Image 1 (cartoon, rainbow, N blue to C red):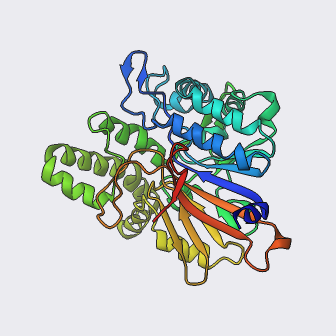
Image 2: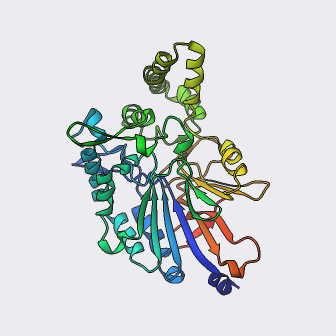
Image 3: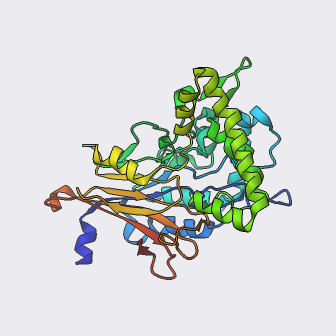
Length: 380
């Protein structure tokens, strides 16, 4: 019986990632080609659904698994070069995002003001500047004092976040050398006492390569898989694709290859180190094998980052979920192609221990459709 089943649920965990809220479609009257998020109303609807009705009194934890705001894609701020990574610049970028998406922040406020609701924000690579104390405080200032105690912002690069026993949540950039960073080593202070975020070379790659070419082809970062994108690009958009490839090669040689050669002074070891850093998008099966199957503490691993939604159950009964993205993607892999936008999210129900004999977790990957129709469908 549905009624009895709902009564046995002790806690619900909702996980979304990679919304990439930017500075809005227009900034100071100019079209912003770096904006990727256009689903404010849909996200607010999701938040309202899981905080009212049958969820009104239930304990619901919303986990934002990284890249909620995209501080790498905020144009038109009066900070340049390394000043872009200062605490002052990051606060200004965050304010632009808030101004452009006030509806979403109001929705979060309304979610948190309800009984038994919590927000856990896991920092990703596009919002890494939230590790700066004043930037984090500025984010908290967007909410009333009443709900701030229900918000936690964390950055746990190594172990991940465990909202319940056996469930591990990581953004996913930790598996890439280019985008990983350690919070304790990523904040520097100048002689004047100003704090700066020390970006990885992957952060610089986004701001100096991806953002520049995105102004010509807004879809440049949203096509998967990259190999097929390059092949199709060389056929149908050869000149642009060649310029993009050359820019990538030159950037990598200048930033990483020469750096490794200066460190190693040997060609072979330079190539080995450089190859490790070219793994831009993690291999799902490798993550499952190394992180999930080899761990006695993890039964369900949830990541984001790659923007490709996935639900996989292993032979041992463990579960891997990639929550995908709330931005528009173009998938050239015919086996995984989906029509339109898939606003995907994970939902985990923790069943009361005393009412279950064995497995007390029910998890799934869903597509939000809005409450004017069926609120979600099973992801296949």
